[in-house]
Image 1 (tube, protein in one colour):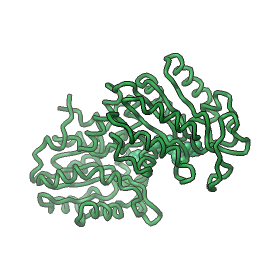
Image 2 (cartoon, rainbow, N blue to C red; image 1 turned 30 degrees about the vertical axis):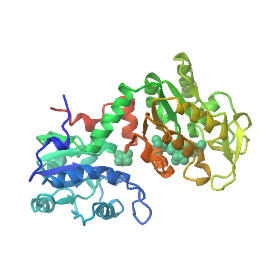
Image 3 (spheres, helix red, strand yellow; image 1 turned 60 degrees about the horizontal axis):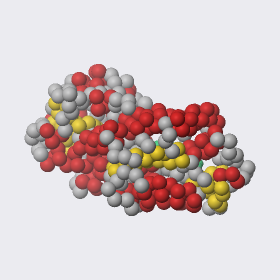
Image 4 (cartoon, rainbow, N blue to C red; image 1 turned 90 degrees about the horizontal axis):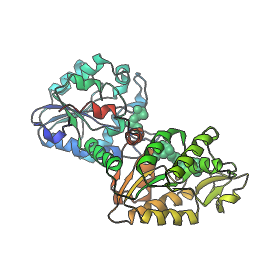
Length: 395
Ligand code: ADP
Ligand code: 3PG
Ligand code: MG
């Protein structure tokens, strides 16, 4: 079977429901603090309206759990979308119902409307057939461009496809599918994986899968601390997962059995106060009892970059340190710079915080692909078929 893409359809005068992932970070005044997901949806939106389609955009935002809550309204997001598109985008007060139907009926070819948060209805997360049918009634063609939410079997992602004849992927979803599939099925070798971030526990599945597919591993971030602890090092007051020490030991054992280098930091940056700028670089043998690891060290940066330079494919998930504090961002940014300097390499970053870190470094444009997915990307790489992609696979 195959999946159709938005440009496979005659869109002229058709009502086109586009499921987007506008679940973007906002500050306390509800301003969008990272518009990557909005920008990533623009090619599909522009394609639909420039081909005479009547675009109906729908998304979730946050977790309002079936309750109307102004904090999770898409209205502030639409303000940012309007700026990106260069015209004022109208917005409905709901996502189903007579009033919404009327607004949709009044659309002309090339028009666009954004529906209110899908999760204001409990039926969305429950994949309720009645709610899915009510959404389906709004359109002739269903396009899913919400890769970041494709791991959710929700009504606007799965249920709706049972009630619409023509369904397909937007450009963003199709691209994510292409790059991430290629990574796992035909990577050019050597294939190097960089792991970091906070938890081993969130990532066991994907690490085990990558242990089968990739050739060499570099590990930083708080994740490295759990591995260092498993190897018997004192990690002071660092963040690590006590109950995942055995899992870490098992992963180290597997990497050894498979003869795949699993490289941990040789030195780290430590501090006694997460909010301060105080830091020093110490060897992993000398982590003080009253300090915590917040970044990879100077020697480790060099070793990691040296390994990175001799690879053909790179997948990176998890920042090397607590990059939200500029004092502890150097390790992460050094790795981003090292990758950005390479030619003829496929480099893919996945994970919400990892993508944010790479963008913050200023090197994002030099990567082959910066995934818009968090959980979706990790599940995809783990080999779990994403319900949102499966639901489109019918031709
Ligand atoms: P992603 O969202 O890309 O999958 P994670 O959520 O696993 O990544 O991890 C990101 C978080 O890890 C960031 O908030 C970063 O501050 C944190 N982090 C990385 N290294 C450390 C460390 N040594 N100590 C504490 N937190 C860390
Ligand atoms: C994400 O931000 O990862 C997606 O939008 C999915 O959101 P969810 O975790 O609230 O389902
Ligand atoms: Mg995260």
